Amino acid sequence: MELARAQQEQWDSAYARRPCLHGAEPSAAAHRAVQRFGAAGIDDVLELGAGHGRDALFLARQGFSVHATDFSETALDQLRHQAQREGLDDRVTAALHDVRDPLPPADATVNAVFANLLLNMAFTESELRSLVAEVHRVLCPGGVFVYAVWSTADDCSRHWQQLDDGLCMHDGFVGRFFDQDLVRTLAEPWQLDELTPYDEGQRRMLLVAMTKLPAAQVAVWSPTEMSH
Image 1: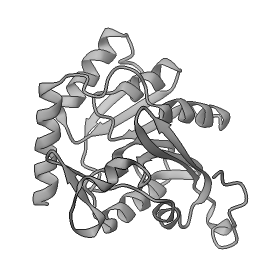
Image 2: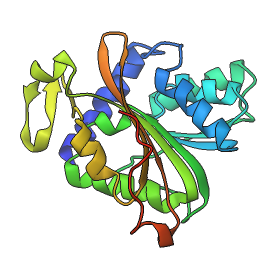
Image 3: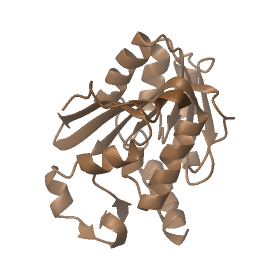
Image 4: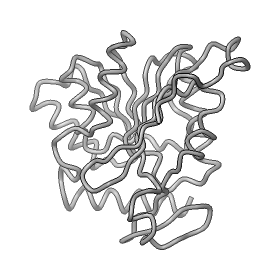
């Protein structure tokens, strides 16, 4: 909890110092999510770790209704103001939430969840498993979870200071780099539709897409459509 509070203050301070911290352009993961959500006929998205909203606003511009959450009120204020400036405040709502706590939606009430880089943050492996289980809980059967994370193939993974439980630190920020084994571990009991390495700028990334199976299919599913 002390680490969580320290990281919340760190991110709040970073957003205050540099509004639009991550730039205005949407992430590559958001572009992929638009394609996947659109193909599934989904029109509403829960975004976790939305920051100042570059992806939430992009999703709204593509016609999705977006409920964005983050644990930085400073970032969410920036998101809200930009949504108002663009006339998107009827499509974008924003709420303060730390994903270490249970997600607000009721069971099986959400069609899609999106998270760019959130899972890289300062979570223990136990907290990561709890977070992914919460996403599974709130999604409807057939609902889709798309997320992107830094890969252990990224050069930065060798230069950050190593901490306990697979975490590492650089310039006061704590995070975790993902390998494909961790992705597959977190994918139980999901259908893992996509696990794709890609580059974004200088970063080596992994794009992951998973579908919540109906309960009757969980025990018999095998991964036959996964991309490598």
